[in-house]
Amino acid sequence: MTIHSDRTADELLADRGRPTACLFGDQVEYEAELGLDFHPEAYRMRRIHLDLFTGTGGVAFSVDAPLRKPALAVDQRLKFAEGLAELARRGAEVVVGEVTVADLDRLAAAHDLVVVTAGCRSLTGLFERDPARCAHSRAQRRLFMVNVHGYDMEARPEHRGGVFSFLPGTVEVFWVPFHDKDVGESRSVVLEAAPGGPADRFRGVTTADEGVDVLKGLVDDLLPHESAFLRPARATSPVAWIEGEVVPVVRRPVAVLPSGRHVLGLGDAVVLNDPLTGQGANNATRMARFFAERLTAFDGPYTATWLTDRFDEWWERGRFTSDFTNGLLAPLRDFQRDVLLAASRREGIGEQLFEGFNDPSSLFPWFFEEEAARDFLARCDVGRLDVLRYKLGVGLRVAGQKLGGWRSGQAVRRPAARTAGP
Image 1 (cartoon, rainbow, N blue to C red):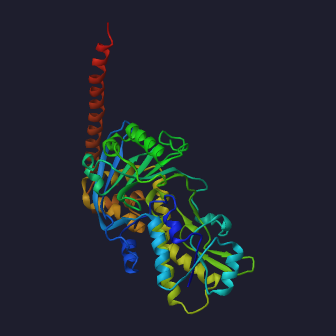
Image 2 (cartoon, rainbow, N blue to C red):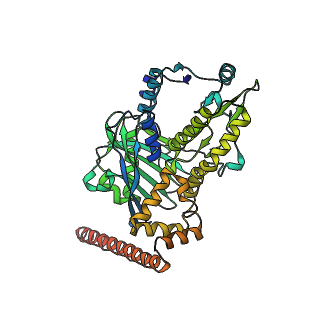
Image 3 (cartoon, rainbow, N blue to C red):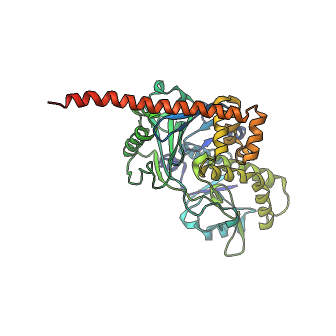
């Protein structure tokens, strides 16, 4: 086996920050089975706490539930550097240098199969876009990621697990327990802003410290529930941040080279989802596992037709990952809010909901089809009257928050007015 990388292990380790890449249960176990769990000391995420914010900065309701299996987010600079070194120790030949289409042609002539798992400028356009499987042609969110430490855990004990903050139509923020290359236990904050909206503030950011300052201001304005937790936080390093956008795309899995030979694409090279549901690394791991099993069991030549058929077989289940992500990029529908609301009262429903991050297919059809959602809630002994009662409770809570905020504002403003007098 030959592995081609455009950087050495040391260069990967010294690279700037990379996407957060949180692996959920089954994928964590699979890496461990392969002997790739290099950081047993890394913090495991065992619960998720989701807050649905209102436009006035209050929390309408929260869902707090366990994960069926722990999740793990390790700095990809560590993972890639250690993985490359481990492959070399296991006997793979590691070749460092950029790969061009001409190089792929040469490699395809000398190997049974060439697999492309990452995109680079020299391979732009190699895999053709599959319009039948693409839901979007432009980015749906503006993204910002920064790794932080020094936060105030006592202010928000919920952050001992994963925390998701949602302000519908404006922003989603994921606070992920993270094993950082430089400081170890930390939190990776992944923010997705509606383009042009009040959370789209990071386009001019040029440093990690500047990004953290902008993040703190945004949290104060839109998600004040998190302000005390974040206020003392600082970036783990000057390079542990990313700003930009992702255009979701599904590409055809086999590319034909100028010679007529072909290569297989896996991972983000052919299925690139918005990071909203944290599925990038999970999807790549699932795909790699599927193809490793199929390739190992097959004795014949890896023809373009056979490889395409295997991808189509994988897509029967793999499509749920894209459907899950694209479904949450869309505005929440009323019946989905009802499910979330029921989950805020029933931990078991929350547990089933969060299992979707590990296995997106488990959410279908009950979280994405109205009739199926009603049937699901009925099986959970949640009827329409229960939902109405939950909604009434939320309405009273939100009204109380607004009234409390008005009273607080009056209490602050009145002394100021008296002090300003003659």
